[in-house]
Image (cartoon, rainbow, N blue to C red):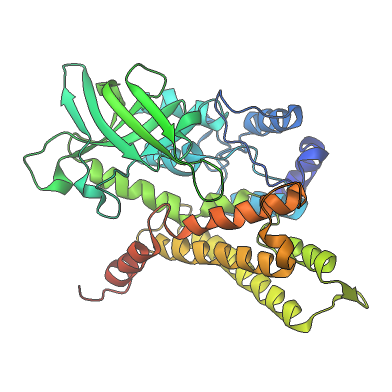
Amino acid sequence: MSFKEEVRTWLEENCPASCRGSTDVPGGGTKVPMSDDQRLWLERAADKGYTVPSWPAAYGGAGLSTANELILLQEMRAMVAPAPVMGMGIMMLGPTLLEYGTDEQKEQHLPKIARGEVWWCQGYSEPTAGSDLASLRTRAEDAGDHFVINGQKIWTTAANNADWIFCLVRTNPDVPKHEGISFVLFTMDQPGVTVKPIQLISGASPFCETFFDNVIASKSDLVGPLNKGWTVAKRLLQHERSGMRALATGGNRETGAELSDLAREYVGELDGRINDPVLRSEIAVHYMNAAAFRLTQARTLEESAGSTPGPATSIFKLYGADLAKARAELQVSIMGTHGVGWEKDNFTADEAAITRSWLAGKARSIAGGSNEVQRNIIAKRVLGLPD
């Protein structure tokens, strides 16, 4: 039996029917509930190593080659099987620890990430350090076997649900700003951590303000050398921006299928086709763009032999953000006045949710590094253009 056949059989036998086609992917951790089938799917995939298929088996992965990982992701997409678990632990911190973490750090954190037992959040941006991240002010003072941390972070995604945080702190204020930063890990449930969700235009609050008042981080949870956290931080962002793990979502958010369904419902169809040739063309173009983007990500993964490419990942972040926003605009356009509903008394729950998703999507070109920053990285580090 080929690996493709083996994977297809395993997915058919182990992915619950109720999970297939869902875009609701749990982030793990202890604070967000899962359905029984979601938990079953996570447990089965974790036992197989398929939550993090390319990671070594010693840390909860399946140790798959790049070629076999792509086969697994393709079969999940074909079945419309969602990732068993996602989040910053899998997409960002885990790959970074594999590269920069000590053996003890890998053994402590990676298996829990692979099993969805811990939810991680990211402590990067501050009120005065957004695009100019290296200007961060959160301080970590040496207290022997631990650091004492004081300061503030902002736009800390899902900090209110997180168990742990990976955080950039200033450990030496007397050197050039990029050279005095360290990368530390610490728990979010300790005294001194205060989290305040930020209400957004969409009505949701995935982002938070996070305050640290004499918070403790163990020296054993310093990732990379002291004062050299900027290198670790940049590498983590490359993992985030590569979007490789997004290939595993298995959903049909970017295939155009949902757009076609919406168009048939709100515009109508004639002889089996959407009853608007311009709209048909727009949906087809979006489908081709999304497919080309996904295939480019897969090709890049193959060519890089499984490792994350460098500054070129900014291309994925830039185009992926624009693609997602374009899809949301097209979706609202298809639905007309039904696509701008707010109160559920006048619109269905699905219609109100689409409006809120469209509004929330405006942040895609800001979160994770603004599109302007990505263009600068591409210009300087990929194209080699002068400042």
